Length: 73
Image (cartoon, rainbow, N blue to C red):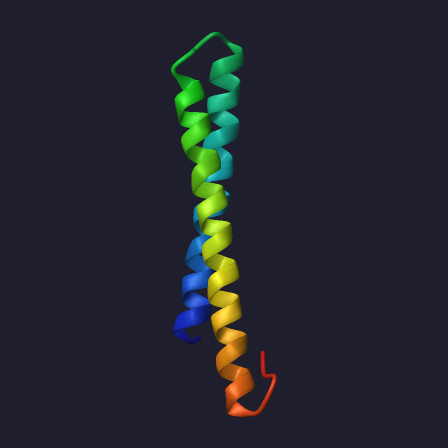
């Protein structure tokens, strides 16, 4: 597995963890914990940032493969 695939896997794990935390914070917020809203906002930002990083890595990977003369996945 190359560096790009490892980075993408790491970012996907971050998204998965942030979604779990977001769900738990949402449940706490619905029960009346107003501090959970800050956690929810932070988790949404983590999900967004990790998604953008995956997109950047994917574009970088495809650019390198294009210059190498193939479209290998």
